[in-house]
Length: 228
Image (tube, rainbow, N blue to C red; front, top):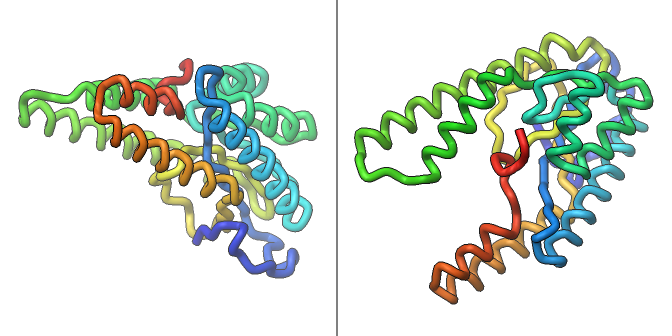
């Protein structure tokens, strides 16, 4: 069972001895054209996430494996992919790899590309219900296969009494093995950022025009907008 760190009681570290542990960090993206208020909140989120991760690792065990959404290569090649995706998560991952953690290839490239293609189709909208249902079904199938692959990678690489870190988008549907203790890293800045985004969405809705809609689209990029 996954519980936010901020609300989690502090059991003794030895209670996790022999267990597999997975620290889950939600991916938050930034970009140069986003409002300064958003980028400042993004910076604060990642700083707090890093601080919480360090406390977890100090108490429970340093991460020996790192998994990152959209990464299908290991080693330096995988780090280069992360650097293109997210400068903040790259900072956290590269430091841990320098300390001996292994960056695992979480994704199967073809599956990830297929899912991204179906997502782009769905974002375009459909005139035909038949086509919409077909694409939705194919998207669901691809998503299920991708999630199953990611879980299999984690299950096969995370050893007994080891800790790992997973960087993944919020709202993921990964079903982890029951013998893995999962800790969701949820810094206070995440709620602050979400409230700010909701306020911006309400302000845009009040404008009621296409120009305003474009403003919200430019605030927080999704993972699909990152380089593949």
